[in-house]
Amino acid sequence: HAKEAGRNAFRFYTERMNADAQERLDLHGRLRRGLEREEFILYYQPLVDLKSGLVVGAEALVRWQSPEQGLVAPGHFIPAAEHSGLIVPLGEWVLQEACRELVCWHAQGGRQFSMAVNISSIQFRRGDVEETVRRALAASGATPAALELELTESILIDGAEQVLATIKRLQALGVRLAIDDFGTGYSSLAYLKRFAVDKLKIDQSFVRDIVTDRDDAAIVRAVIQMAGSLELKVVAEGVETEAVAAALRAMNCDLVQGYHFGRPMPAAEFRRLIGVA
Ligand code: C2E
Ligand code: MG
Ligand code: MG
Ligand code: MG
Image (cartoon, rainbow, N blue to C red; front, side, top):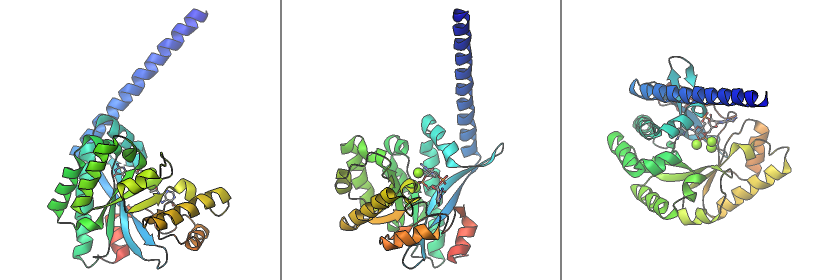
C-alpha cells in the first residue's frame, strides 16, 4: 500500500508539475500576445512633497488589461515576464510610454513634474538598459533630469563592477536613480556611498505601522536621518493615513506616496489632478 500510495503521490506530483508548467507557458504566451496587442497600460501614482502637500511627480505602474481577466496587477505577471525574458521588451515599452506622458505634462505647463519608472533586475542585467533609456529619451524628447529609474537593492548587490559601470553610464545620461523598497533587500550601507544614487524609497512594510510600532518608527527615523546626512532624498511608501503622514512630518521626511495622498490612476485622471488637461 505504501508503495502504491507513493506511486500515486508521485503521479499526482508530476501531473501537478505539468499543470503548473502548462499554466506558466500559457501565461507566457498570453503575455507575449498581450504585448503585441498593446494590452498594457500605465497607471500613475502621485508623489507628494510632505511639507507643501503638492504633487511633484508620479510613479508609473504597469497594468495588464487582459481579455480574459480584466485589469491585472503587476504582482501577477511581472514574475512571469521576468522568467520568460519578456520583461525586456515590456520594460522598454513602459519606459517609452512613461517618457511620452512626461513630455505631455511638460508641454502643457507642468515643467516641474518628474516621472519614476521601475526597472527589473532582469531587465537591468539582460537588456541593454542604458541603450533602452537613451532610445526612450530620444524618441520622446523627455528631459533626462525629470526621469527617475527605480532600482532594487538586488540590482546593486550582484556583479558590482559591471553594475557600477552601467549606473555611471545612466547617470551620464542625466537621469536620476532611486533605490526602491529600501530595507527589504541586502541593506548594505556601503553601496549607498558607492553608487551615488539620488533617492531612497523606504519600503511600505516599515512605514505602515510607525504610529504603533516603536521599532518600525525607529527604523524609519534612522533611515530618514541617514538619507539626510548623505544628501539623499527620501520617500516613504505606503502612507495610508493622516496619522502616519503626521508622524513622517515630525521625522522630517521629504516625500511621500500612498493611498492617503492618491492611488495609482489612469493617465487622464492624473492629468486632471495636476491640472494639465
Ligand atoms: P513598487 O515599485 O514598490 O510600487 C509601489 C506599490 O505599492 C504599487 O503596487 C502601489 O500601487 C502600491 N501602493 C502605493 N501606495 C500604497 C498604499 O498606501 N498602501 C498599499 N498597500 N500599497 C500601496 P503595484 O502597482 O501593484 O505594483 C507592485 C510592484 O510591481 C511595484 O512595487 C514594482 O516592484 C512592480 N512594478 C510595477 N510596475 C512595474 C514596471 O513597469 N516594471 C517593473 N519592472 N516592475 C513594476
Ligand atoms: Mg517602485
Ligand atoms: Mg517600492
Ligand atoms: Mg515593491
